[in-house]
Length: 396
Image (tube, rainbow, N blue to C red; front, side, top):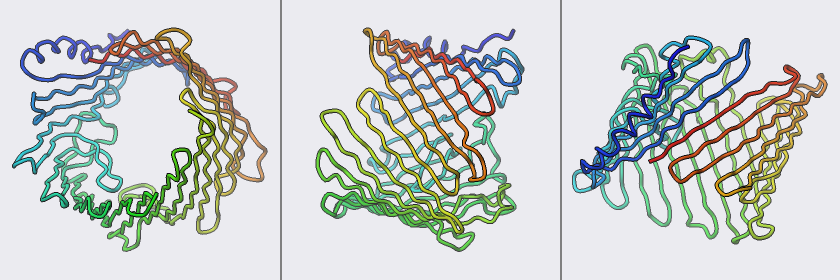
């Protein structure tokens, strides 16, 4: 049997004292997880996760990373499967009289629109109190988040966001994003986002994005959230959008069609600490439509609720229960149950599915924790699918 990889956990804990002694601030976490399940054969997978953050005393230089190692006790894995680097970023802050900050490396970005992970540079420049610019350039991160880095000719990304903020309780973002390889353009967007609280008791959000490659409006979103009182709030939203399909994707064989979604939601505090939350969604396609309704009752320990769906994606009635309680000091038990009765088309009979999970968590202190979880599932494909999950976490 292969040795299990514990390098990350041991390494970071051993160097903590030397970093502190050297005038650097060092924080991080290490987690070892065991996941057992049965597919074509029994698998026992051991995961080692590590996150760390190293900063100078004045926080002007910061290095942070998030990574994972995997071992399967029953089969050999390629290195691309075994090792993942989710982020590795070196950040410089408050340069040029606190106007410029930038970071180098692998990082997750959401620059006013969906982007994902980038291997490259991302920076912010503050022109004045009301005007700033975010800029980024590099290559799209490896799809498997392995240690490999794509070449510029394979997936080059660049763009930016010009922001006008803190004027009449409002903020405006003007954005540009381009993804391409040596053959064609994957994705080419421009547009604007608007956020405002200028209307009484209203938090307004508007997004309008245009697809330059296909010469059409890609996304239009208008959302208003109203906290009428400390106990009651409502949300109203309209969204019209095309699916985001890259030019080099397999899904280009299908003709992309826009969908329109209307959403209405409300939340009310029945009495201290207990809330009821309801939401209705109507999705309209070119030749069909679908409805979805959620209703939940929740407090600080968990929730119970149900969901009803009908239309284009099939019919479903689901019941959910998720609750946790501390039955002894530092011991928390939780139970999750999800039952659904569904069918994908009207010509089919209804099928049933039941998913359950039971978890026991122990927190020795703010540094050390252990979690054990047992999961089981029953549906028309499997009479029973059982899985075991264990986490051992250390934070410093």
